[in-house]
Image (cartoon, rainbow, N blue to C red):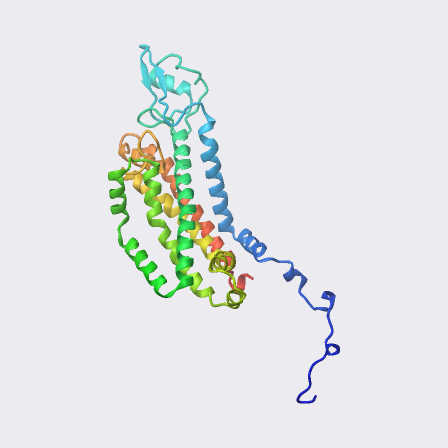
Length: 336
C-alpha cells in the first residue's frame, strides 16, 4: 500500500447483523435483568424478601383481623358484675371466664382469641404489635426516601463541581456529622411535641450524610469517563449531565445504601421511642412497645417478646436484602 494512499468508499463493506459472531444469549441479557437473576439466585436475599413481605402484609392487614383498635381496652364482667380488665395471654374467652369466674363478657367477644395476649392496660398486643410495626416502617420509608433525594443530590453536586464548591460543602458535612444525634433530638424536643413528626425530622437531619458520601464517591469515580466528556463537549448542561447521565450509572451503590439505611432508621426510631422522645402513648411503634414491655417485664414477661421479634426480623430481613443487592449489582467473577 502506498504511503500517501487515501481510502475510498469502495474499500469498505457494510456487514449485516447475521454476519457478526455475537453471543445471542449474552446480548439478550440487559444489565437490570442480570441483576434480578443474580438476586433471585441468592437464597439469603430471597429469605429476607419473604420476611419483609410477610411483616409488611401483617402491618397492613394485621390490625384489621379483629374488632379491637390499638388503644381499645378489653373489659369483661366478673361474678360481682364489675368490669375487669383482661390481662395476660388468653387463648379464648371461656378461659378468661374461668380465670375471672365471671359471666358472659361485654360485647360480641365470645370466640375471640388473644394470639399475643394483652398488655397491662388490657389492650390487645396482636393489634398493637402490627400497628406499631406499620408506624415504624412508615417512618423509616418516608425518612429514607427524602434522605436519598437530599443526600444523593448533595453528594453528586459536590463531587461534580469539585474545587472550592466541594471543599465548602464537605466542611458543612463534617460539621453536621460531628453533632451527636441525641443532642439534635434534645434540641428538637424543646420546640416540637413528641411524636412521629419529631422522629422524622430527627432522622432527616442525620441520615442524609451517609448517602451524600456514597453519591460523592461515585461522582468522583465517574465524572471523568468518556461518555461524560462527550456530553460536556456536545454542550450538555451540568444538571443534565449530573441527573441524566451520571446518576443512571451510579444508582446501584445508592440503592444498596438505601437498603442498609432502612434498618438503621427503624432501629433509631425504636431507640428514640424507647428512651421516651419518640412516639408518645397511647400511640405505639416498635420502640414504645419494647419500652412498655420492659417496664412490665417482671409481671408480664411475654409482653416484650412480640415487638422484639418483629424488630429483629426487620433488621435481619433488610440486611439480607441489602447484601443480596450489593452482590447482584456488582457480581464477583465466580458468580457470573
